[in-house]
Image (cartoon, rainbow, N blue to C red; front, side):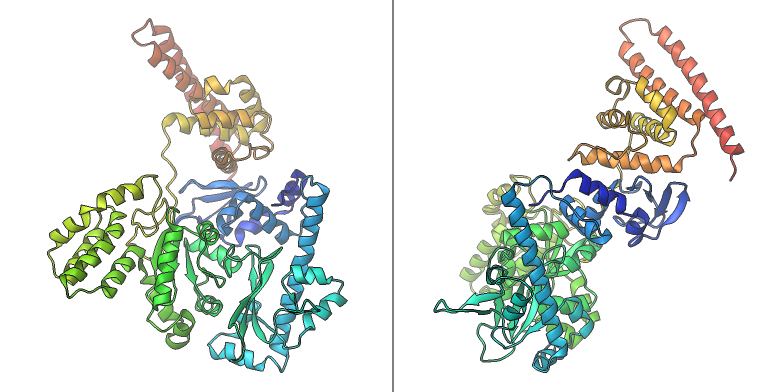
Length: 617
């Protein structure tokens, strides 16, 4: 994985217009010299509590407590890690990233990979042009449009067509300067069985580009257009760039929408994904012709914590859902199932029932555990006592993952009704060997796939399907923490005087909270550029510095207000000394000192209020 040098990161930071970046999602309004506010993109609210400082390029929400710098903002809104955020911003603002020091071999491998990506991008553009402009592709166009897919969405997905000629891509790419080795490494050419010449891997097929999270083409999924062609679907072979099972189809297009909705819909076929996007379900991704892998589950978890399975309702599709749950077990994911009629895939449903109908089906998604229960009941023998025992045995591990809840009681009642046994008796049967399974499921503290113990931020298992997870509201702070943060914000608002006061303080002795101690130590000498040099990986400190920066932007610089907040800190420190001294000695001198500090603080507050009243509005 490429790492970029500090100079590259700073060039990206300098190039980004924070108002432009955030304004793409949030309607911003000026609220001060260095502050803009708007409705938070990370939780539901009616009154703006989200703010940015465009100069420092930080954001903070006073409602949910989410905050950080421009890179953190992109991580949250786009569902990527820091490296992905850096690369996305570099692409968007035209900044060339320079890798950190590389050995010659690593540099050579990177350059080779970049050439292969360029080759794949050129080829995808060529295939798209052939689809819409060539006579040979008429049947492919008719097939796609006949499935109800519109040209605009097909162009957005860069769907194309590989002509039937044996060497069209091979010859054109060699003329453009690419070698036979590069065509082979990119998965675009293969050698004849007799070891002879190379020829195009894809011919007479509809081409679906398979992209990474940045939208770079890694390979292709190819669908045959003739009944005589086998196999029906042909993917790029594993190679230097493409690795089967590592990526999700359309993750680059769905990522931002999934971050906003808090969910991701997983479909199977390429046309299913495209049809759902066309229907307005823009948070849909697809399997790339594989059973769900651990790498794809990791990618899903980066997109959202709620996964809606919209796989075919036939037996193969149901088995795929069960396999998906096994792969996802232990991940902090909430799995739900979209009810689809047997024999119809999502693309068919969109074509037959329309966009509104498929969206309503998505909203009626059910917790995966309900799907498991109904599946076992549907395929079990409920007429004989032996058959009922088999169903109960199959359901024990399912109920072992369920905490006491309304959903559990509802499912117990469903089982009791279907096997015609009293609910209390069914509950006792399910408990007989279920306790050990429940302990195993909860033993490592992780959330099992399909469990109703939802991960932090996710909706409850029986909640609405499309509800975005809400971040926890900002933690209520005690008096001391509020005072310490208020003082640090005042230091940022008036950096010259604030810097002098910070130099006089000992963060370890003069601040009660570990976080504000770290913040005070970090800000000493950095008030002009507070978000620089935050220790890597300290997201808690990064968020607090962002919060303080945004708070400072709301303040009108005031020496009296800074003095009042500094005196409030002195009072709090003195209160701690008085508490410690009670019962051990004379505290009269400390109490007298407290009264003097209170008098001085109150005078400073009066001066600050007078300054505010005199200030122009």
